[in-house]
Image 1 (cartoon, one colour):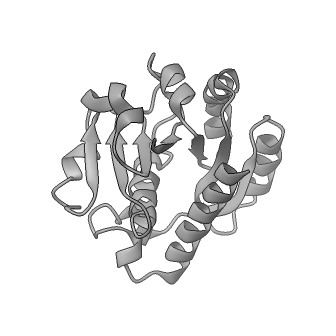
Image 2: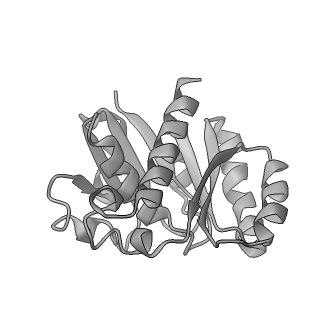
Image 3: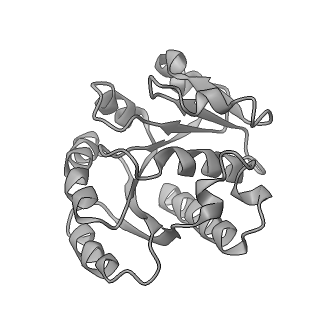
Amino acid sequence: MAKIITLAHQKGGVGKSTLAINLALTFQDQLSVALVDTDLQGSLYHLREEFPALTLIGSDQLKEIQQLAYDLVIVDTPPYLSNRLPELFKHSDFILVPTKAGFFDVMAIRSTLALIQEAQVKAGIVLNMVKPRSGLTQDVTELLENMGTPLLQTKVHDRVSIARSSITGGILNGHDPKAKAELMALAEEIVERLAN
């Protein structure tokens, strides 16, 4: 059975889809990977021609997610709490919750974390799109550390190379060593969390 990593956050604009596609590409070197786009807009699914080596699946196959013949399935969720999230969380092996280091982003995370706690599944929060030299990051870090879901050590910074990665073939194909290092560190930290 496939290991399932789901990316979720109630708020839009926190970089879930960009992280999902880049994580899928990162793991693809060692595993058979499928990326499932559960957003009805199908933003990722429409990129399938840009990434011919990556299996992109639409939300119509969500019911068979555990039976998909892959080592790893990464699920990108829509920027709202759909009624399918609790069921999806129950089938997930790990839930990654990307969030910006903004007060409203952190306040919006509570509903998602409540669903994760109900599902009793491994999860982690990652600070994403972090602005350089932001004093707010420390305040937000302290808030997140007290929310009951582990805050990952890896931080993904706000970089043009990451923002453009869905049209440039992904971070690993780019020329930004810092972005590559952050993505690899995030992938490694997720693997460690899955193993424990």
